[in-house]
Image 1 (cartoon, rainbow, N blue to C red):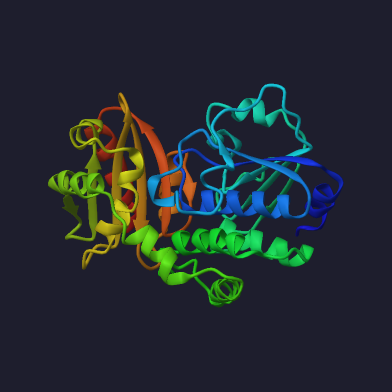
Image 2 (cartoon, rainbow, N blue to C red):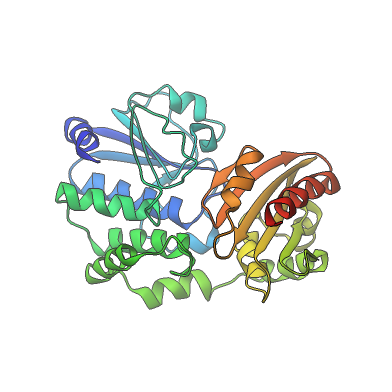
Length: 319
């Protein structure tokens, strides 16, 4: 899977590493790990992200000095790695410019990935992009420092919901164990991510729960975070991370739907499900994608219109 990609790495000198907007643990952990891996073998590597690093991931090795939010107009790259992106446009405002760099190497695990780019390693059976990068490093014979192991472990931990989601398999635990052997500290990493919650997140959750609604006899649960709520508690989009997982945890709920107002008449819709209910199919109908139990899309319109369309699609599939 990685042979051609490793040939490009071997031949090149300078690489750009990037991922999607609204960063999560898999995106940031994978970016930082790859950047550190490339630098460890004597290459030049830079991480570009449109959005700032969420506060909960600033502890990651390299988060403070390897990530940039502006592209150097004069910089030259032998290749660009697009990580954890189902489509090039998800990189954000610089996607067109980055799309002009050749070759583009697409490494991802989303079933909705359009296999864009010149070369790609896409495996929907992998738990995370972090797991794929571990496999690539193993195939290349690259050594993993404790810092690299910490980033990859974080990528896997967060994208499996602390090893609770259906994308967790025996191979996932094997990789996680190997990363612990190489220096990742599970207790410390979990504490940084899950036990250091900012007050704004709690306040935002308090307001969001005021919008909670149930349908189909409690099998569907929805919640909204509006821009006004975020302004009232001085929260950022990152503070709403995991709200969809939180309401999915309610007893009897099979599908959770989390609506986030991202701009005027624009909403991000995050789906989470239990068991065999495929929310990736629902998100796909609205131009989004993801995984069977975790997916998302973006929809224009007034909130009630968006909510009605989404709820109707989920209820129809549930029937």
